[in-house]
Each structure stands twice: as C-alpha cells, then as structure tokens.
Length: 337
Image (cartoon, rainbow, N blue to C red; front, side, top):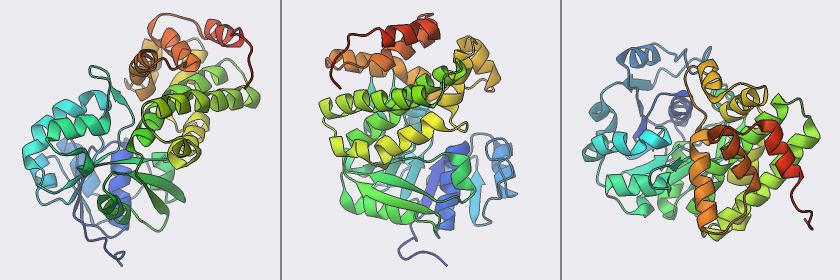
C-alpha cells in the first residue's frame, strides 16, 4: 500500500549503487519511479529485477522501471533525484534541463564539490537548470547504499530552503525501513557531506598503516571539529554537525568497509599509489580524492584551519607519504581542545 501522499512521480538519474537504492526506496514508499541508466543493458537488467554490478544479490521491486532515455525518465516527474558524480553533474544536467518540468523539485544525491567552480552541488544544479535554489534539495546522512538496499533500518536528512518541497521529498522516500527528517540547512548538509569523504580517506589511511580504534576515533573527532569550523564560516548551522548529515554520516563513512572513501584510503595506507588504488576499485576514484583540493582551497580562502584535509591533499596530490602526514599531524603545536 502506498504511503499517504506518496503519489509523486519520481525520476532518478543515475543507476549506480546509491541512485538505484534511492529508486528502490521511493518505489517501496509507493511512488511511481523511473530510473535512468546510461547504458541500455543496465536498464534492461534493472527491469529484469536486479543491478548486479552495483547491488549484487539485491532484488529490485517490480514497480521500479528503468530506461536509458532521459526524456522517458524525466517527462512528468514531480521529483528528480540526481545521482551523478560531482565533476560530471554540470555536463549531464545541461543536456537534460529542457526535459525537466517547470515545477519539479531537484534533489542532489551527490556529496562533492565541483572542482572548477568550487561550488556545492545544489548551486551547480540551480545554475545549470536555471531554477531558484529553493527548488533544489539535498539528501544526506549515514546511508551506505548496500545496507539500505537490504532494507536495514536507516535515517536520512532532506535539506531544502522550501519547507513544502522538503516535506514532499520526505514523503517520497519514507519507506518502512528508511526514516527521513527535514532540515533547512542546505549549506551545512552539503559541506558536511563533501568533507566527511576526505576524513574517511584519512581514517582509511590510518587503518592501512595498522592503526586501531583510538587512532580512528581521534581522526573522526578532530575531523568533525575542522568540518564544523568550515560549515559555520560558510553560513551553515553548527547544530547540523551533531545530526545525521554531520556526525552520523561521518561515523558511517569513516568506519565501514562498504565506504569507497575509507577503502580507497586504506589502500593508500598500505602503500599503493593513487593509480594502483584506482585499478583495484574498478577504475573508480573515491569522491573525497577529487573534492579534497577544492575543500582545502575554500578553507584557505576563508582562513579556516583544516589540517587533516591538508594532509589528505598532500598524500593524494603531491606525492606525500601517509607516514609523513601522520607525523606532521602529531607534531602540530599543542593547544587546548
């Protein structure tokens, strides 16, 4: 039975692990859902009930339909979820903008910063689609795709400046196992979502060097502190950092082997180069590797101290070793917490 008010027509653009999972959630919440996949063979597989590459052993609902035609997915959609990597969001959305309905709500599923502009995803979406930022929402929280696809209980945050749109998106993803909360702090949720990937890389590096829970807890706690400094400086709310989009997402991403960023960092910690780590992850680079430079630049521009982020940039982009980065962090000037 459909949830009350869950009759919004939903399009999900991007059939990766999280895009497919969000499509499954919306279908389980009672929405008519169309999922766009770039490759026709992936769409065919999803229509047959699965997406083996990204969600092995997960059966998808019969009501979820997939297509490789953007127009088929977007025509008539009330809510459009965008599950496109941060650095290709602009180009993809530019080709779709004329297909999006005049009052559709656009929801970013992407946790990153556009490198060329240093813009958050909601800003990129509003710019490219030619819509007011009030029409753009963000979905963020401790949402590891495979666990959610297994219907393990989880919660998330729908951040939007327009409260009515936030509630509409909330209703569209309110599946029995998935509890969405609303929030008006788009800046805080997006910056936290992008930065936690960088901190997860650092946690993975520490694990790769054989360090234990004390080290991980230290990186998470000090990582939370530097993210909070940036969030507040950029106009976000400090309280967001104590919630699902802040601490919740950070803890999940920094600790789980399902986290691409943590796993990527662990490979670097074991001594693999960036190219070797990329090869072992099917050619995919963790989002935090790409976003770390932009985040470090934004922090420097605003005078925000982010030592863990700088250490990740040094390792990923300037040939620094994980051991040197750890020594540099431990050797910083002692001060009060």
